[in-house]
Amino acid sequence: MTRAFQALRELIVRGNLPPGSWIVEAEIAERLGLSRTPIRAALQWLHREGYVVELKGQRKSRIVVAPLTREDA
Image: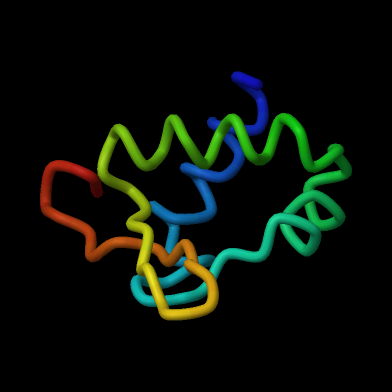
């Protein structure tokens, strides 16, 4: 899970996943060569750290990259 967290955080901080972009677990898992389980755990961790936010819709929710602050960069 630490590897997934660090890899996802790097993608966000470096702008490869810009603020506002939707995060799709399956696509990220394939991109990083990991299964969806560590990606899901990493997304929960990133949510707690403020790197991603959950947008709740009527039918389903989406996880998007949060706006970056100076401290994040």
